[in-house]
Image: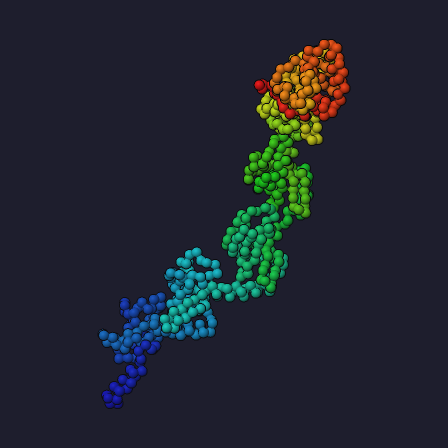
Length: 558
């Protein structure tokens, strides 16, 4: 063949090598910076050695490369293995995107808003599309290989956007359907705690989310699910209910154990002593856990026989170990009544032996009420002095007239009511009743001195010796007509008066101020007139009369 024909043939073959096309070549030499490749052109081509990273290559290997330039300034053919792979991969990416398939890729690094992934070409994985649960640290994904769905491709800019979340959701949907088709109530399954709320826990059952309500977590009392479980924890649970239409599953954790309330009456018979831990304090009592899943209530009234406990928190604390006695059981409502005071003897059981009627006691006034004063006889044991038992002679309307809180007083036990835990005390019983021999102290016609203590519409009360009160009727104040008692007498005023009546039975002494200067004859007439008055709104027994008093004088007042 002539040289001219050979040159023409060679030129024709060279013309088939077009720039920016993919060609096959053979590695002819491997240098530190480049790999020389023969593509059948008049000069060999060079590929940067960095494009063969992690590849084991040898002289003689056949590879595909992108012909970038047939000649550069140095007369060398410029080739790229990576760009050849990129062009081939881009075509594959477009086809996978059009077909709706999946592509595998390796996470290369973290960028703003997500991750870069090599799927043959560089692609972007937004942070929201990494997983169904927002990741805490994106770096944990770098270097891992996953399957992705291509959600967006820009051919002009050669941009690819991926989603791993859609792949996971699709897998979970398939798993969820398989789960719902096969699961039944009563099955025991394993899952992972996915999320925790105030009302319960969501458990991932391999693609299916089940709800474990807080009431089905424990047979005992828990205030929040975090007391028992944590996110990521594996749990064995029981299927309680399945709603295939709404794709809902209800789970139970406590059902994995025997119900401690089944044989509760045999386990904790009434009267048995138990030990437990205080789990909750409320205004009306304390809840005590006596076994796993079993709590009893100690009512505030069952804490002590004698101590006045206003709030359980005054004597108990959360976590405290206590001993108690079983008082009652309601299996249906899962309630147990406990008592702490029953561990000690009731001081009221022998109260009548320790304080028989007639016993003199000393105590401090603890409290005053409208009808009497409470006196502490011993710790937790109070007796009550009624206002009517303060004095034989003085009419006490309120205990504060004779006593004040903190006073040390003496009294006598006059009655004991063990059933209602009440003791009645009396102060006046310490002395003899002065009315018993009143007729020896006051006689008709006696001229007496006294102090005005109370004023009423019908008369005035005069305090005589030995704290005995007498009553001056309004008609006995003056010879002149008196419209209002207070026009004639004042509280605390000292007066002279005649005794015109002594009634031992009704404890009443009638007095007359106007008769203080009467003769014996006048005195007999006035006494007869006084006798004619009958108990009414005008003249009543001393006990009743005091109720109508409008003004009052107390010792020490001016």
